[in-house]
Image (cartoon, rainbow, N blue to C red):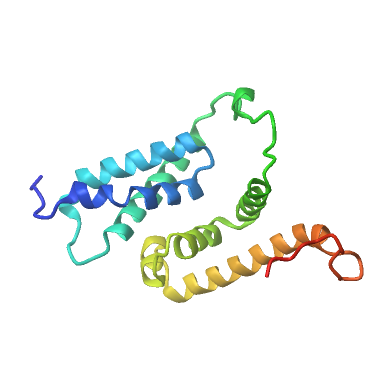
Length: 183
C-alpha cells in the first residue's frame, strides 16, 4: 500500500458528520449507524491510495458506505438472530415537545418512502449532494435521480399533509379560530 500524497485522514475525518447523517437514513438504530460509519472510515482510510484525486471524496465515501450497508444486509439476511429488539431499548415516555412530535412525523413519512427515493431525498435534500454525485453514488443516470427526487418530495408532501390536515383544518377547509399562524 503506497502512502497517498494528500492528507487522507484529515479530509476523511472532516466528512464524518455527513457520513453519520447518511448512515442514519440507512440504519434506524443509532448504534448500528455509528458502526456503519466506523466501518466506512476504516475502509476509506485503508483504501485511500485508491482514491482518484480530482474526484469527489464525499461521493467516494458515500459509495463505500452504501455498498457496506447493502453487503451487511445480505449477510444479515442469512443470519437469524433472536428477537428483533429488546424491550429495554424502547422509550417509556413519548416526547412532549412539539418539535419532537413533528420530527417523528417527518421520520415516519421518510420511512414510508421506497428506499431508492428516501436515499436520493437524503443525499440531495439533506446532505446537499449534487445530482451528478448522487447519480454516481446510486449507480444510475442523473435523470433517474431527478425523477426519484421529484417523486420523493411529492410523496413526503402528501404524507405530511395527510397527517396534519386533521390537526390544522376544520371540515369546511378553514383554520380553527384558536390556531395561531406565524407571519
